[in-house]
Image (cartoon, rainbow, N blue to C red; front, side):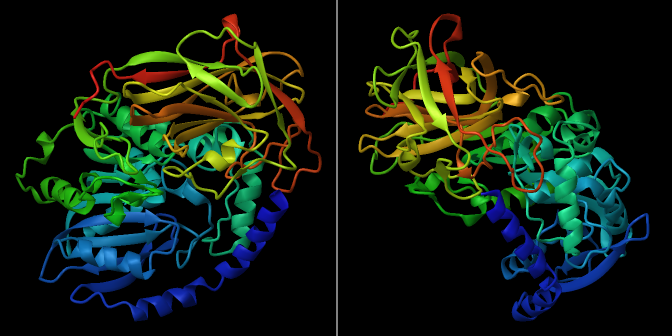
Length: 564
């Protein structure tokens, strides 16, 4: 699996050198009139110049500026049309490529030049934008995913001209929710690096830092909420594991944030995949939600910036603090509860944390999930073979899709409630507490939550993973002793879901799921960017009895589920 990735990595780097010519061709093919575009090279404080594309509205100006930072290609037709559309609303739009990517000069270091290290490229760019004759000096930042991370780093640097932000599907820490996840490695191909060697060097450097140390702290904005001092809208998607980053960005800014940040945050959560809110469609994965799930994200963003950058008294500051969509059953279940928007004064809304215990099966791989303490078999065992991992397709989260094929793999165990006689709503944070042992020195534990429909479809809502060596701390690795029982506790994530009557709630446990999760060799050896030379198949044991009862802690809503 790792060999396949490295071959792809080398090919990707080889192709990256061709990108400037491709950009020029794409620019010539896109008509954005009457908006005009200008390409400039903006100097940073160290003399390095970064590539910025400016989109100007019609008229004489000056105008406020909306600023986005990305490492990916900002000249693809869809991006250029989007920038032009936004400029037509009366803003200059400035799209910048990270240092060392595409046409931007300098050494590629990922996000490390954006925030609070040696370089502050976002701070320098905002200062440049504010001084231009066509600028009012009022800057807002926007964007999602990579551009969402960039905004968190930018906020920490406190540019004087930056007045508001709008983030979608964002993150805070590249160790916890980026290049790593739950302690597992997530190798990146860095194909956007201008010099392929710099991308390979960065990938190799990451593997020299297996624990959360000073290297990773330079890419963790969550350490600096007190310096984030901006009114901000943060949007997250239920079918995206990065909704954790969006929600925790909101929580950190709203509460311990700076004086202009606390009480000026808004959070929006809806039934979309990563970046899916922009599609303006109610189709999500294999599901089709009611049309009320379509959210006018561009109009909401413009209204936000109209208030904070243009001074329009449109009442946006009085909008609900939290707006979230409660997912319900679809697939023909017209009268199912849920599938509605709610508001809240904060996140998460009040709920009763309820234990759902994993009950072992008397025979076979399928156990039971119930709020009663287990009385049956004390253990459940399964195999984990990194050389032959159970398959989870793709590198991205496969939410809103049927996961039953994965659940049937012999190295996967499922725990399912009885058929529900009344709807059950989970809204808030879901946590896992597993008691485990292994015949290996290290292992990964993947936990998934699905909504099982009456026809057997098992629709994936959320998943997360924890590498056992990080069970006690991110700052040190402690390997397991074969046969000894350990508690592995971690957050599975956030959700808002009504499991309808006639459905079942399922929790799935496994220790491999490639290529979505890079397989753990399970030897306990230090990992490198090269393929692992040694791998160890192992037997995993989940415990169910007494003080070692594995369980899920779910946020069950205390209010009566809406009925129709």
